[in-house]
Structure formats: C-alpha cells, structure tokens
Image (cartoon, rainbow, N blue to C red; front, top):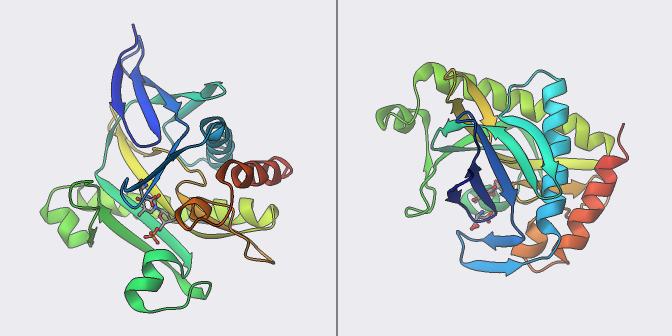
Length: 236
Ligand code: TMP
Ligand code: ASP
C-alpha cells in the first residue's frame, strides 16, 4: 500500500510498507515567489531527481548524514522518514537574491565569510527570516539541534563548493532543510538539493545554471538544468 502523504510545490511524498521509509516523486512543476509564478516543464522532475541523487551520493561519501536511501526510477527516490524541522536554512557565499535587495549590496560580490540564515518554514507567512532566539522561543528546535544544523550546513557548504568548483561552477547560495529521523531522532539533511534550491553560476561567465533562469525569465529551464546535469556528470 502506498498513500500520498504530502504534495509540495515540486514533489510528492508517499508512504511505503515500511513506516521508516517514504517514496518521493519529483514533479515537472516549477514555482517561484511563494507559488505566485508557476509553470510545468516536461523533463524537470527527471533532471532534478538525477542532480539531487548525485549530490546526496557525494555528501554521503563525505559522511554527512542525509535522509537519502536510493533512486528507484527516473523521477523517484526512497528516503528515510523524518519529522521536518520547520526552519529553512540558507547558506550564502556570494551576494545575490534577497540578501542583495535587503542590504543594498551588489549581486556577485563575494562575501568575506559564509552567512547562514534561518527562515521560519510557513507558506502562510511567506517564510519570514528569524534568528536562533526566535527558533528557540518558538520551540522549532533545541539549542543542541540548532548547533548541529549549523555544523552540518557548514560541512555541506564545504563539500558542495568543491564539487561544483570541479565542474567550473560557483556555489553562490542554497537552501537546506533538516529532519529528525522517525527511527532515532538523529538530525539529518532532508528535502532536496537541486537547481531549484541553489544559485549556481558558471565560474568564468557567471551564466546562471539554476531556477533564477525561470524566476527572471532568462533562459529555458530544462535546457539549463540539463547543462548543469551534464557538467556534474563529467566530474569524477
Ligand atoms: P533568496 O536570495 O531568495 O533568499 O534565496 C536564497 C537561496 O535559497 C537561493 O539559492 C534559492 C533558495 N530558496 C529556496 O530554495 N526556496 C525558497 O523558497 C527561497 C525563497 C529560496
Ligand atoms: N520555492 C518557492 C516557491 O515556489 C520560492 C522560490 O524558490 O523562489 O514559490
């Protein structure tokens, strides 16, 4: 028996016979600006599943705990069931997007140090930015869990900066979500890492290889994701 547990903007989650395992299906939908902009791109689900699988494999090789189990079809993965920590963790290496807007900084300027930001995961409120005091007061996570989330986010950044640099790509910023394993409570990286959730620029030309091509009407999304996929596949 497999039941739809949850449908998000870009993925569906289904139960499996094992209560500790879920099946994720990547959809062809793309949304931006909290769902205000929408489109369907045939092939997007397959590309994101392939790219995310590659990334999770690399993270697991570096002993970063994730919810990922295996890719089971073009558009599906098996993952460990978690309780999602309702915090979106954004890691930034280069100024872009909302950081540029909010602080009046120029996009493309390298930050002297990595910035980690927390957002309260709430579509209703439009994911407002919070700090650790808010997270603790709202009991979104404990102090130990927040420290672990920061530590893992920083390790993910180190590993992914290297992976993308090897493909000639600059990891500008990205969003992570963490969960607590239903089985043990351990904090693990969850959700997805894909061009939907990262900003990725060609190191030399700064050509965008992520969802900003859709958000800003710059280029064809599947063509862009395919280019990214091919560049990652070429990395050993
Ligand atoms: P931002 O500059 O719009 O705050 O986005 C920072 C990074 O987080 C960027 O790589 C895109 C990613 N992101 C998501 O994955 N989901 C979201 O809902 C938002 C707003 C950003
Ligand atoms: N993922 C969010 C949305 O669909 C925002 C974004 O990535 O721009 O609306």
